[in-house]
Every structure is written in C-alpha cells, then in structure tokens.
Image (cartoon, rainbow, N blue to C red; front, top):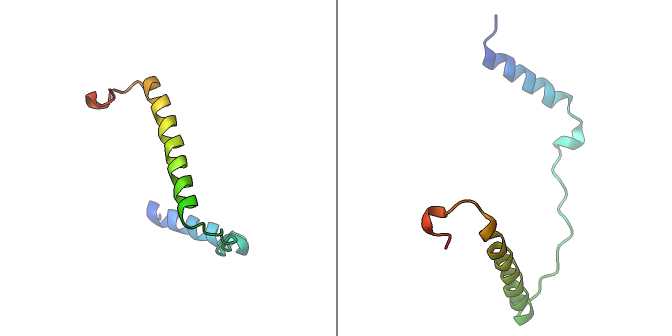
Length: 72
C-alpha cells in the first residue's frame, strides 16, 4: 500500500503531464501602457484615490463590525 502523500504526488504528476503545452507556457507581456508624466498624472492619481476613499466612507456605516471602537 502506498502512502497518501505518494498518491497525491503521482496524481499531481499525471495532471501536469496531461496538461496541454500552452497551459504551461508563460503569458505574453501585454502591450506597454504609455506613461503619463507631470501634473496630469498626479492629478489623476489624487482623483482616483479620492473616489476610492469616498466609496469606503460610504460603505463603512453599513459594516456591522466596530473595529474595536475605531469605526467612529
């Protein structure tokens, strides 16, 4: 009788060997995103963070946890 770890290792090996080759190859890099510089990018970062914080503050009153008294 084989040990449970041996059976699991054999099953994993069989699964890897039967997987199609494309599943084992790395994903190609996506097209590079043009980098924005200067004040425009900084303004967009601030705007995105503000939107995220506003969403969190809107959701917090609906949260049942008190976070150890820090929710208020």
